[in-house]
Image 1: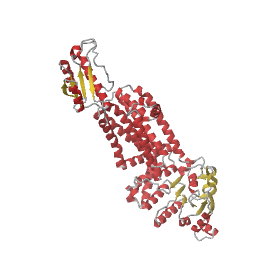
Image 2: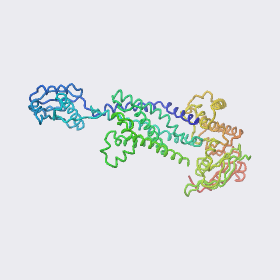
Image 3: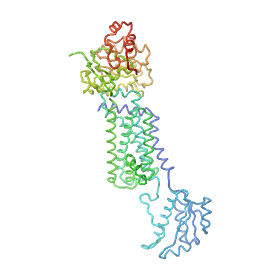
Image 4: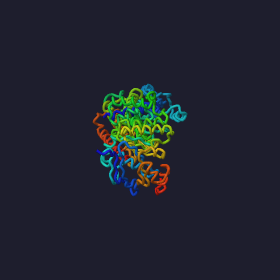
Amino acid sequence: MKEFLAFVRKEFYHILRDRRTMLILLGIPVVLIILFGFALSTEVRNVDMAILSAEPDNTVRQIAQRLDANEYFTVKEFLDSPSDIDRVMRSGEVDAVLVFEPGFSDKLFTPEGPQLQIVADASNATMAQSYMAYISAVVGQYFEEQMPEGQATGIVPNVVMLYNPQMKSSYNFVPGIMGLILMLICAMMTSIAIVREKETGTMEVLLVSPMKPIYIILSKMTPYFVLSCVNLVTILLLAIFVLRVPVHGSMAALISISLLYIFTSLALGLLISTVSDRQVIAMMVSALMLMVPTMLLSGMLFPIESLPPILKVLSNILPATWYISAARKLMIAGLPAVSALKETLVLAGMAVFLLTVSMKKFKNRLE
Amino acid sequence: MTDIVIHTKDLTKQFGTFTAVDHISFDVQRGEIFGFLGANGAGKTTAMRMLCGLSIPTSGEGWVAGFDIATQQEDIKKHIGYMSQKFSLYEDLKVWENIRLYAGIYGMKTDEIERKTRLLLDKLHFTKECNALVKSLPLGWKQKLAFSVSIFHEPQIVFLDEPTGGVDPETRRQFWEMIYEAADRGITVFVTTHYMDEAEYCNRVSIMVDGRIDALDTPSRLKQQFNAHSMDQVFRRLARKAERSE
């Protein structure tokens, strides 16, 4: 135990003395989460609209007001002829036009209901889709409030956005980016930890010493684990107070699974470290081989369901996939901790597997 | 009890069909300075790794500090010190932190570490540099410090793998004074070197050629045997027979 503590202390010195690296390690999560949270958003914002109605009566005005009052939409103008649509869209004055058919209000109480059309600029398909859905939601809500109880409105499809009613993309990004950042930082930090000693020659001395390999591996992990906990706190604080992602589920469960994920990532980094001979290689492997698959296959950017079968298999062996899934359940869906049981078990299994392999590889080095 | 601290008999290591170490047998006495010479690729490093418990012999036997090198590596590791040709201290740790780390790894007690650290720094005239980072020290100082650290826990045997590479002659002389001092205290010194003048400083020298020990005796008798004026000539005569190249 004393040997272990002496070694852990030394590892802390290594990190604390290397100020620049430490600042990078603590700074990267802040930069990344702000970048991804704000810049990489597919969120609907500042949508300029026009309303086309032959007779802008009370109903039409009220809907227009509703939209205008909403922080995401600005009603720029009222049009009276369908030929104007093309003009305002082409000139870029507005991004969407809400079209009321002639006699809209009169048809409100007919069995078939009136027609309502949304014309959107679909040159950015993702954006168009999200503000269409959102306009529908606003209009639908209006009619739901106006109509007497039990009367079918039949006007706008009743779209309900579960969990993320405003379709905020940061909701979706945050668990993903947490998975990516923690994986990158943890794996990269530890991947150089053992290789560095091989390069400087101190590893030989350690191998000749009575220090047990498991102690060397665990004591290498300890300081990075502490550092990663600091990162986890930073990320969670930024997510909650800056990106305003609520944590609906149990905070304790979220933190527990995050710590498990950190441990798994550290073990992965150590494995990379024990098998590679040069720091540069270890860095490349952890940066390229982990970052790209994690971004593309973990469900962070693209849904796993839409991946081809072979990539789905790959996706399943990434620790990030499981963590992100669990974090989404706990943060955004607000499901009980039990729902993340499968993810927890998979991550724990991966950690044990990675550590065992590192140990084995480490021993083989002695030969 | 015998005073033999290293004993090998027909010690052999094979990697596939390649025999790196070929039936070597020798004994080393307590307090002896044993020079382990050989050209690059002659099998020195492999033999030394087996003696340090890093590598298991293919056949033959070996005993280090009374422990079997094939089965009791962990016990051996507690009783030996090691210093490699590469610099073996941590550059970004302070002088005293390095000492404390290695002493801690070998399980020494805190008050003993403190007492011995003060003595050591005093002896090396390092007291002022105690808080300096190791990377700021000149190479010769580092090597002296590394050697002191490798025998800090009073091992029975210390293995030095080309300890004086790249060090100036004056520091090398001081380094050898430290080796003699350690040997006087009863620490057996097992040293590999490329400097033939250093081979003259050893009590006995073995010369490995192609995995075998071709000569083993005191420097003066080896010179007599090979009719040479210096160990350098002895080494050249033997090395010429080598079939293996690097």
